[in-house]
Length: 395
Ligand code: SAH
Image (cartoon, rainbow, N blue to C red):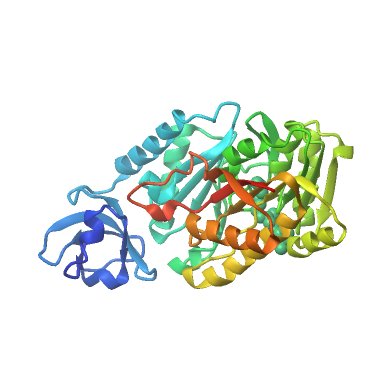
């Protein structure tokens, strides 16, 4: 196996079990390694530390697979890791009456670079790194063996792929081709997911528990579901007894699916309003029209893709939250989210504070929300935290 020698003092991160080695920590590479190949890591004194996979094209040059330097990750290794990730889900609460959830959450499940989501009888596979790319046929074969899905579809079209020197890879990986709409159940609500073209792997599975939490505030309420995508929060609000739900999104296609989802879950069309447009503008127009809501949900897309984008992202979050605060009835609820990993919870709270000052509204945090339990965060890998949200009461 090729050996990666670390610079003096740079073994520290590994001793803390952090699974990434940046290119700058490497003194030299002894032997040949192609992107994705296995490498053994040694410190400057030659002490053997771990085994991972290598990618010279990525800033993250090595991702650690095992802290046993004598272990060779072979088929049995990968099967064991997949099996463990699947077993972890079996004991999770909140997955009853639910057929769509994340089975493998990359680094946090000891499988760096790999995402696997289950949608009823189908799996969606996302490879984020060269190391997974090189092994995707093997991994698909093992997943077929372990779970016997009808098929596995690949959606390796995430924004991080170019940083690994990879282009998009999309298409069937194993078994049958999924239908254009896969029927799923989430907490007893029904949805039809387009795993071929939908966002991420088709659905925002990470918001599942938060939809449940927010629904508890919606009985009898007029609800604005901004950045509503295919209406998932709206469906929860409607089934929880909301009087009226406005789904707002810039995508007409997503809103067409939202309408279908509302009907599929027995929410009468008279209770549903659909608004297509840019939320930043629509919320301003609604203020001019003196429209008010009892509950507003704000779930915008990722605004910051890197640390450098945090200032502009912060301005975006502040603006959209400020606009929403103007529209909440006194005593009403703002459920606000950010899925930008580089905007952490304390910064997001400061942004919200700025918006509340400018809006002249007193805001109290009632609940702090995060990603669903099937998207766990390993303490060795705090970078796995990305979704955060606040349920706030607005006076
Ligand atoms: N809450 C959704 C997920 C939202 S994803 C759920 O639980 O399923 C973010 C959504 O914001 C996407 O549907 C995208 O089309 C929409 N979007 C992006 N920019 C927008 C903008 N400026 N105005 C309105 N919608 C926008």
